[in-house]
Image (cartoon, rainbow, N blue to C red; front, side, top):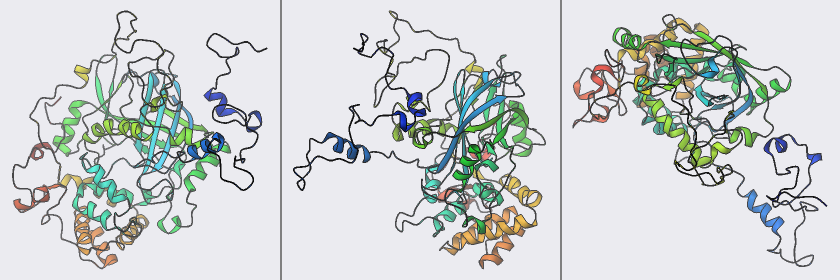
Length: 560
């Protein structure tokens, strides 16, 4: 007779285990109902006689259909189509001088999961759409999870956080026609032509990097400025770069239609299956607080601006480590669809900056996960930290609470006290002291916002890249039904380069505006307007905050 322990488990601990279940083969399993009772055949159904109605008592059939109806969870609003794999990170060049983060110490290594994705499309959309790519990494360090939520472009379309939902809506299907901008690009260009700070990202998106040839052949960039803090409490601003060891490859617009809808998924999966493990070099740019102030004062580059980049000649890349993907997932849903990345998940030695879009994402991402996966999303094996200490907090209950911390007090108890570790970082010094009035902030477009896009056109794009760029933009504009929008957008391009504007006018047959000095934007203050009546966004005249007039959100002298 089998023996049982006091907790009703059979000796030998035969309770279901995630790792065992993940690795088990079908030949080693027995078909059962969800309650564990064996069942002879999955296709059977109970009915009255051979030709009568079904029986409600048939739990096997009712449970099968009920669960089937609930197999899907809400897809991600952005980054819905994605691929991923597991691997490891290792530090090759420690940065003890910059950060106390354990994973950056000499010889450290940790497991990782990466999810790549497109941004605007649905879960069944084409892998070769012209779209930025998500590049999210979960580092499972000895001090908890650090989630790097990056993209394959160093900039984005916006720097004001409230614009994000509006912009994403223009990337989705039209509410009336239900068409995407592949068939009707009017909303796409309408947004861009009213928010000209997007021009840097537009230059990247419509250039060769707009369609990577699979996820292995693209870089990753944090985009947002973070902070690194060392053991002395000193900190620097930092930008993280992930440089592909495979090099960069792209697909032209013309060739994209010939590729499989799952081109990037196939390429990544079978490369790993064949032992061709993709890797990336992890590097950082760093900047001292005073350097950030001087960078704005002298060059008008804002470290808190997601549309600006740091000049690598002034702030060179410093290699930190390498990461590799060497293991495909066993179950896509459990390990990729349910994996969650949260930029607020940081470890000691890494802190957020005052970048307003980053600050908004610190809230938005975990809020999305609680809605999409559930309140206890961090208890799923793919999301749970892997640390040497027994984790505890005072979060309890909620849907699907598995690790509910037993009988331990759910408050700070003096009867059964919990252990604590001293804070490793002096947050008073790391984050400074922000004192000021509450302002309604909205950035404005300025001449410096065109410097980096102009450098792309004049110094990076060769003749072939320029021709492809004009073809990509004009081809996409062909589906825009409002010529006024095209005129505005060409006017924005003219601030980058007259060459771009004149080529687009020829390609589209639309004569653009001579620049933006005579335009009013509904989404951005126009700091280049000749007429003051055109400066304020959307024609606002009453109680308009001009907090942007001095620094446009950048750190100024003495702000640290």
